[in-house]
Amino acid sequence: MTFRANQREATAPAEPNGRVPRHVAIIMDGNGRWAAERGLPRTEGHRRGMEAVRRTVDAAIDLGIETITLFSFSSENWSRPAAEVSFLFGLIRIFIRRDLADLHRNGVRITVIGERANVPADIVGLIEEAETLTAGNTRLNMVVAFNYGSRGEIVRAVRRVAEAVKRGEIDPAAIDEATIGRHLDTAAIPDPDLLIRTSGELRLSNFLLWQVAYSELVFLPLYWPDFGAEALRAAVREFASRDRRYGGVAARSGA
Ligand code: FPP
Image (cartoon, rainbow, N blue to C red; front, side, top):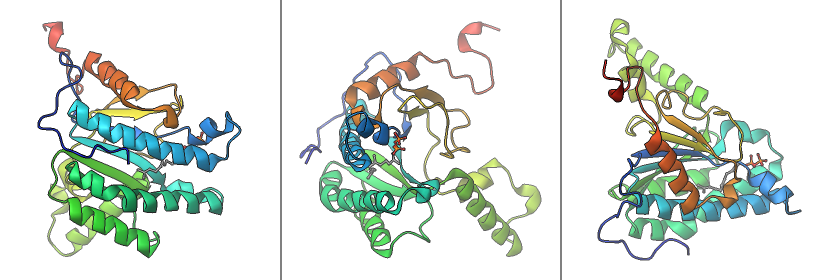
């Protein structure tokens, strides 16, 4: 097991002078290319990618990050060869079965977002078990985006709002951004402050499109299996150097 066996008394900020993002969302990209460059099967890239997940969770706890959201399987990933889809499903099974106890001991709360309707029943069972067991944990909220696509999530949210309108619970004229936010899978989760994508690709690939409206975006030129504490710290340093204005003016502009 890579997760630490004991919870620490307090979380020491690794960058004492910098701002630490409360919520970091990560598009874990490049497993296949990492493997191909080494003449290995793509599945080996995913297996090493899971080790990077473990390192990243430890590093996020060290940095005092409150929420980390990991894109582990997109609704578009069904178009991959069946053997690769089944390997990725196997990884989530292994992850929950092998790591759940350690995560729980470390105070990690697990939340899974995404569409569950077409997910194998045993995986839905494992997800529910993980969410229930860790519901009271507060050290780190680990959000796993599994069978997730942002447009699909928005469609499901709109359907829920429409049903509430039909029942007479919501007045259409009163629908605002908060109404939509409350009906998304991420209703209970604050928006990401920082979004990281590995592998050098510069796109969002249908990930948290509503939620990243004001997130800082950091694209790193390394493949996900090479990600770890150092890369996370580098992204956090980059975040700390950014001037977040939310459409307003810079604090230092003096206007
Ligand atoms: C993208 O690389 C990665 C994925 C589609 C899967 C990510 C899954 C893991 C890291 C392991 C499981 C994670 C958890 C949280 C249990 P790619 O295959 O698209 O790489 P490529 O673009 O180089 O082909």
